[in-house]
Image (cartoon, rainbow, N blue to C red; front, top):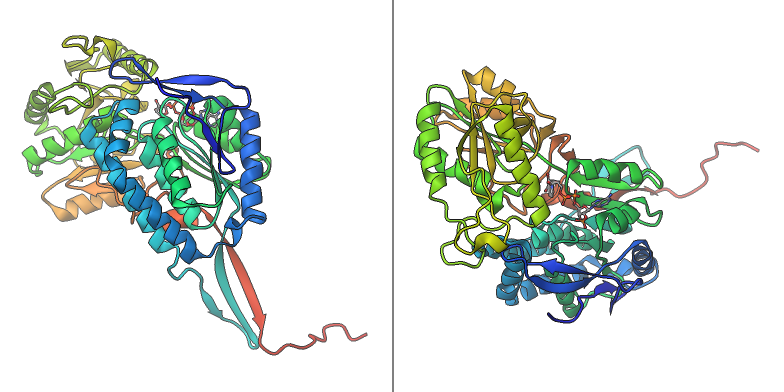
Length: 491
Ligand code: NDP
């Protein structure tokens, strides 16, 4: 085991104030990968002081957009140059297959480049108003941004927030999930190497209930951007009321993947597998409810189950691996409990439903890809976010029934539809109460396009120009082109 991984505060690598550490575990075999500094409230306070100083007094607050862009482009190049190492690190810390980690790292570099380019593009507006005035707007950074991300895409979820926050000129305090901090530590080494001024980017690690909660309530943090569970999002929203922080929340989902009888069945089966089992189902937008038109239900399920049974589950770095370890033992246990709930509720278990212990998997946290049919809308496995490789199949009769079932959720993050009839597909999508939708595909995600949900799936958007706007304030500037007294008062 190497040295303790430290936090990065005010341009220095520092241990936690308490000296505490926590071990980061490889979920494929239970081995300790590294000891990591375990911060708490006081470490957040130190980081916020540094971030505030960098923004108001240090060079960062007055760094022009062109220079911020140059730093972000350099960081993207460094991510590419260290791509193989980051990929391996992500797989070891999170468990995911190498081929998925490789995509994440490439996407992270692309996202930094996107925001590097965006921050020098036109932003404000000008207005024709009554003579002799000229009105206009500019966008300015909010100040100190607190960024809190989960463990399912540690590097990429971090990037989705770090890139726009820094591009817009904020200083940041970043908290990765306590169970997957290693790629964040490496990313901050690259941030240092790229030459960001001290205090502009700070990394604090530690438990959500301590570090995350302190960030959410901190009076000198002006903005919180969070991705994670809906219950945590609710706590953050409450804690943020003290100084009325700007908040953006990217929360959970129970997203429908809907297949009409006129769809290309083999293609839809293929996408439905990807929709639920990519990243072991630990995806906020996972197609965790599969809605099948009743006329094709049985044939579709047969094909789907046949292919699911062939999915190769193995450690993330194994040859030919298709699905890998769950992120942690605790999370695996939670998913297994949901499987028991599904059985007890009376759903039919078509395949999977067990922890995998054969072929050397017993030291890690592996679950067989699982499909339930004969579900009802009231079942917990249909209503609640399981965040694992567990699919609940639902049956619908016609287009109106599909819309009704698809929207029967507290969530509204994402959804996909499969049909050869473009009008039918688009009509369905227009009635779907969700922020991210796909027609004849599922999951494609781009730095250029906004990401976020309706209903209890969140507030605000990541990515695209919408994601950039989340880290800016709009300032109105009014210029008098005929300067002189107004003469409103006569005396
Ligand atoms: P959390 O929402 O608890 O964690 C997300 C982030 O928030 C982590 O960095 C966590 O820290 C931090 N956090 C935890 N508690 C607080 C708090 N009170 N104030 C501020 N920050 C906090 O997700 P979990 O990892 O526990 O997963 C729970 C469930 O959430 C999952 O099973 C899944 O259903 C859902 N989820 C959804 C995600 C999505 O992308 N929509 C992503 C991850 C989870 P730490 O990890 O250090 O405790």
